[in-house]
Figure 1 (spheres, one colour):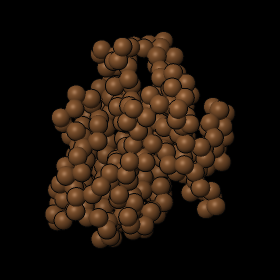
Figure 2 (tube, rainbow, N blue to C red; figure 1 turned 135 degrees about the vertical axis):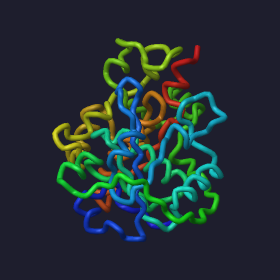
Figure 3 (cartoon, rainbow, N blue to C red; figure 1 turned 120 degrees about the vertical axis):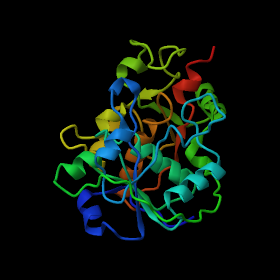
Length: 286
């Protein structure tokens, strides 16, 4: 596996390196239908210069009836080739949510497939454009690259069987749910039809939206994030499995934990796994 990049980079950092051929920028914006936003139209209207577009609804396991299961290694490699991204590129991912909703998912996906040189743009597109930095309206064309078929890192992915072991008490990991308190507590219906209300037994609730400063869209500093986890009864160094509705916002939990761990080079924590099926799988079970 190649060297690991910092989990976050700033807009100033990227602006100073814009056009660097060793970088590849991805617009990974995605929203729930209830948001009433069209990420494709927003990308066509304005994006960071050189950014290519990746839709997580298309880069998934199309053979699964769950919404956002990981694609096969072959499909992942093919998508990277089509985007002009090679295994040596430092990939910078952003979205327009202001909460790292889908950028964190693509960041996690690349890491699952062994692409360690990937970072999320802190503040996302809003932070970039809000400082009157340049934007582009035409879709760039990157030269198609080769991308060897990778292997998945099983430590970063939790299958249903492992979650069942956690619930049964035979796996020491803790579950942390990134959904809203209302969904976690079963006070409202799920946005996807056919799912029960509630949460996986034994889960703690840490909504992904609280991890970012609502005024700036920047992830809170590592010390603040650490205290958020501790206030929820979670040890950031302990084995954790992040869950959510369909495996997207759970990746924001994984990103926050990487930021915490990167803040202290002496700190070594257990790998943070994401339950890819999340409530879309668990919530439909009897």
